[in-house]
Image (tube, rainbow over all chains, first blue to last red; front, side, top):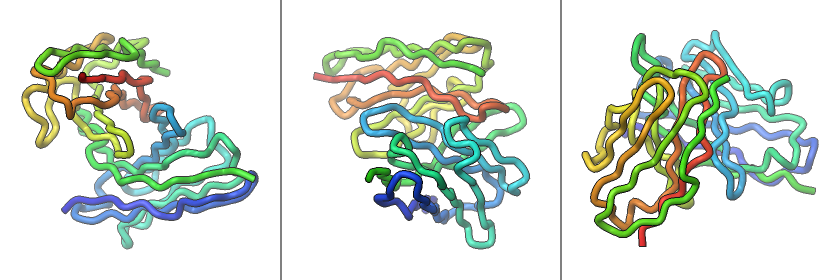
Length: 122
Length: 108
């Protein structure tokens, strides 16, 4: 079964750090780009970060650039998000999602994890 | 940067009716557009990719159309379980992922 399972969320004080993990199974992890997408309480979806299958291409939303770092370990079929200097407005459910862009067709974010909740509060 | 604008913000319909949700891009995105359904407490689910292709397991009641700047998601024969928020999404070189603000569909 194709699956993504996030972990690592929790309560952290402003200015603190947290590392999220996303464990992949059931597919050839290294062949897919991966994303972190977040959703603040009662709000819409916000893309956070992207990493290519070989880790040679990474992007960040302006709202997290310089504070968050995306990485992956293809040997462990795992995706990570290191979050530093956390702010109140980083409070959200964080989803990892699989992404496939073909030569001429975009296949969408076809597999999502269940999400892990990050709460930034003093 | 492409901005996606969805309309209406909220749509209230009855079972058996047809829903038409719109997504307009601020510049042409060809057919690089996907649609997602999200129910409370759940992760989004991919419905449509490449503007009109149904994802695996999605019933033919869900139809995506459009290219360039104007796109629609049509849901025929509405069922109570179709109540959800629907998002459109574009894939690009930068930013890689852009979402619309969502349309809340209520079936009652």
